[in-house]
Image: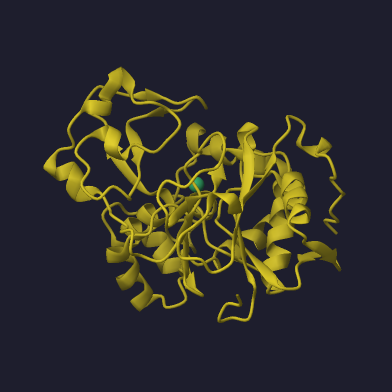
Length: 335
Ligand SMILES: [Mn+2]
C-alpha cells in the first residue's frame, strides 16, 4: 500500500531525551542509512514526537540527527514540552529589555530539568541559540496521510481554533510570550497539546515521583468515554497516593478532561513515561514514550496506513546504562 504522499509509510519515534546513540541504533535497525551525515530511507520518513532534549547524555547528537533529517525532508517533528520549556527559559517577557523576567523562571527546579542540555552546550552557545531558533519552527501538531501526531494530547476543541490562526501549526514569538500567561488561549493550547491533561490532587495530597519531583497533580489520558474515577483516567508510572484510584471525578474535573473517540484517525503521542513492553491503550492511539532515558526503551511504530493500529508494528531498542556502548553504535559526525 502506498500513501497519498507516495511513501510506503512513516516511522514514528517517541521521546529521545538525549539518547542520541540509541536513536542512531533504532534508525539503523529500521533500515535507515547515513547519506552525507543524514539518516534516510528510500521509501519512508520518520516523525519525531518531540522531547529530543534534556536528561540524557547525548542531546547534541539527538538534535543533530533529527534536525538534519527534518531539513533534508527525511523527517517531520512536533514540539514537545521540553522544547517549549527551553524556549521559555531563554526568552524574556520583553525581548528588548534585558531586565524583564524570563518567560520560564530560572528556579532550581526549572534549572534541574534543563541542566543536562545546558551542560552539553556549555562551550557552544551559538549552536544552542541556533537550535532554539529551530525549535520555533516545530509545529505543535501534524495531520497528514490519514494520521495525527501531537506530543501529549489531541484536543480538537483547541486545535481547530489554533490552526485557524496558525495554519502550519507553528507558533510565533507573540504566542510564545502569551503561553507564559495562565488562562490565555496560547497557554491553554500549549499546555494541553504538549503536557496533556492534568488532574489536580485534593488539598494536602502530593505524589513523590520516582525521579524526585513532588507533584500536586496527576497525568490523565483522553480515551475514556465516560470516566467516573481517578483510576479511569490516570496515565503515568507513579501510582496515586493513598489509593485515590477509586476517588470519584467531580463534575468540574470531568469538564476539564478531553476525549478522543475510537472513530477518529490513528493518533501518535509521546510524553507519558510508559514502562515495559509497548502496547496499545486503544486501537487508534499509540503512545511511544517508554522512558528511554530511564533505561527503558526507545520506541518506534512503523505505520503503513492502517486505521487500526497493530502492536506487532512497534520496534524498540533497550537503552543501556552506558548509552555510548550501544551495540552497533557508530559514531555520528557532529561536524
Ligand atoms: Mn514530554
